[in-house]
Length: 185
Image (cartoon, rainbow, N blue to C red; front, side, top):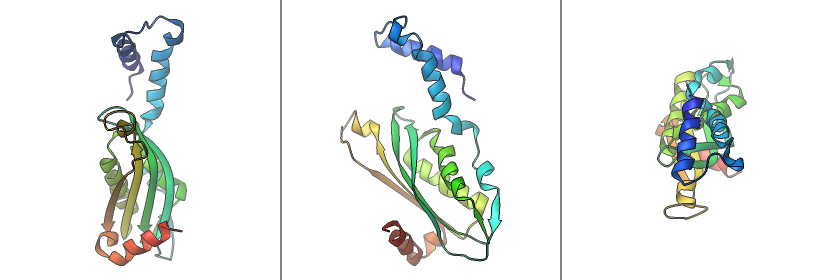
């Protein structure tokens, strides 16, 4: 649960620590704005992917389902700077599918927490396996990290790509090839 009062206090201390006057016109409401922003950015901390993945629909087919280019924004737990990019999710249904928006909502649940990209990729894949119980899952994230763009090494445009496979995707190279082929379309 987010404690907006503590966030406001911390924001005021941070501003003071930077040498700012928290009483000046432009900053008077900044701690409150930051607290509201963090409440939105970290809304996933109080959510479970189960609420999005538990309603499924029966199907006869067993072909791959791919939802690609799911835009996400997250905050790096190392520097509290954003990283953002696209998630691509494929799964092999085992008699049931989930509404397509639910895949994007699952990404949001985990992206709206303090994160590292590697963990985010793993959490999405594991949640799909646990709640959908498909024959296999493949999750790929591509993201740009502001901690590499605006500080440190300062390399804008650098993309970090992470990949997780589960079930048949981890066992059958042909399924991975099909994924890459569908990604190129």
